[in-house]
Image (cartoon, rainbow, N blue to C red; front, side):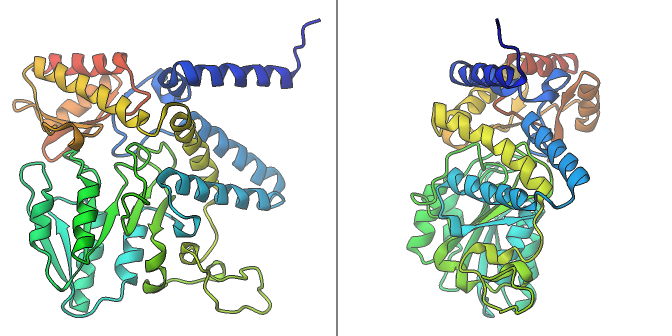
Length: 403
């Protein structure tokens, strides 16, 4: 007699899913994105839709917390630690270098406010950075820190231009891995090598690249990194990561401390102020358990694809789709801001429609269930691995109708 138990059915579904992951990873991924049923979604550089696993984990957490209160708190805490380890694996960091933070802004401020600046120090920032990687550095000017802005050349952040501004008082270069509006991806290896050769540290705003492009911080030793989960990682808003290289940990002042900053965190009756020997010392209070459950479930998809198909597979898929879109737009006579060299490209394709208001075009696209953003006067499409040819065709039809 054929077994029809729930356990058997779930096991079979899991085996089928695993087989599809091996044979058709992008179809497998798309099947886990409920948004794809309605939308051609190209706004991952702004706010992504939650993945199916993230949504399911959120529902499970809410149901558990509602029905059981904190009974399963140890399991929730274990999920937060699993998330920390997933971030560690994603960039090949040491676990002690990973700090869970509410967002990228928190990570930037953690470093900018914690660094032991002296009057006359300077930090170098490219022109056109997102405000989260701009205002925290400008905020140090009250301490006598100079912020040196380096103009872009078109969409390009030229490393030599950054390095020309370095002098004996330069402490850091703070730069985005991928430009939020241009999609320009910097040569991170060269930047880190050249900066370190000059005794300068590198802070990386990684929100537009983390999880997509390969980064091994053992090979490319950025000093600090911050990102959060609501863009390319397909998680919820309100939770992200900061990486602080171990040699710098004790150089950063822990500006906000709490019960969870110390080694024996649960010794409430006899608390001792002994900071953790890890970046987790900056996690002073209660964790975002709900966000951790969701983001961990989403990150699992990324790590499974990387495990089965290689650490470059996701980037290659996204760049492949971006190239198709660029080619199709060029066929229509539409100019993009995509860099000519592949190493500087990303999943962000910003294009210009000179005779069409970008905001009006975005609204028209929404009416056709195509989701885009407007940035720097252009229209920005940010493509993910689960997008497919049908999504691109829907966007191209909207462009064609408005030329």
